[in-house]
Amino acid sequence: MRILLIAGGWSSERDVSLSGARGIEKALLTLGHTATRFDPATSMDGLLEAACAHDFAFINLHGSPGEDGLVQAMLDAAGCPYQGSGPAGSFLALNKAVAKQIFVRHGLPTPPWVFLPSHPAPGWQPDLAYPLFVKSNVGGSSLGLSRVDDPSQLPAALDAVFAMGDEAIVEPAVTGVEVTCGVLGDEALPPVLILPESGAGFFDYKAKYTPGAAREICPAPIAPEATEQVMHMAMVAHRALGLAGYSRADFILGPDGELHLLEVNTLPGMTETSLLPQEAAAIGLNFEALIDRLITLGLEAFREKTA
Image (tube, rainbow, N blue to C red; front, side, top):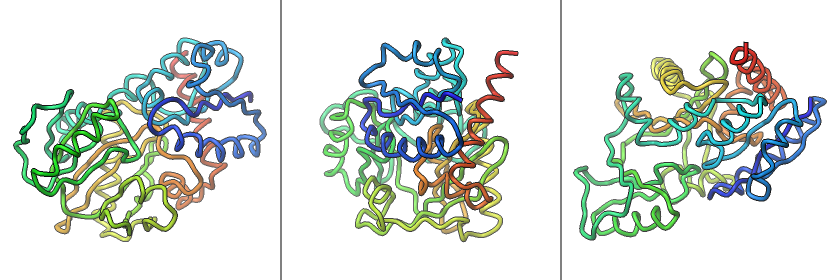
């Protein structure tokens, strides 16, 4: 097939997107497809025309555009199939404050939060117990993420998010370890346990993208009941948000076994060593097979939508 590989964009996660696209392009060629790179940052006005000239689009964008559903809506308008979720589910999942409302509605435990669409007045304090996490409401890759241990650190953490031009969300820090769980088709994948080894003590940008900065163990060596619960919640969240194809849900597993759902990613990282490809490998799907499966699921969804 003629596949349009959409990567880059203008979000703060541009470099992550381009890095993943190199491996995806190699996999597409190995599978016998042709791959044409398309970067919305340099040629957004040509997206509809490019989509109409291809059989399928593989989206590897992070942040906006891409995870916000805009590119998916344009591909729908062009009649071009693509992998993953459609515009509505993508938009709901990207907005953490909105997604958390949906989690609560479906009985999924998530930490309490305060949504800040604009910078609060000097001296503002949330009605939450310290320590806190301050992060972008719509960003990813932990860019702008700060742990705030006392009120004196809050202004700088908020400044870091609003300097990126984003909205902010504030949550209490939940004690425990980070566990992530992917969904592929109608199946939850084996979870990954993440143990950061950086000085931050949590899965920040450095821990995610610096070799050796975190240990990622798949399948996660956690209690069988916890594994079952993580996989179940990942599927519930996937369906509650109206997602398709694949997603990846991030959790904190407390020392008492309590789970806290943080967020769901609709376009998870797709280098060969990223979290979801690791989970796919645990069930026997190498990187090329995973890419092939995502294309198959995208074509099936397109046929159902247009039938």
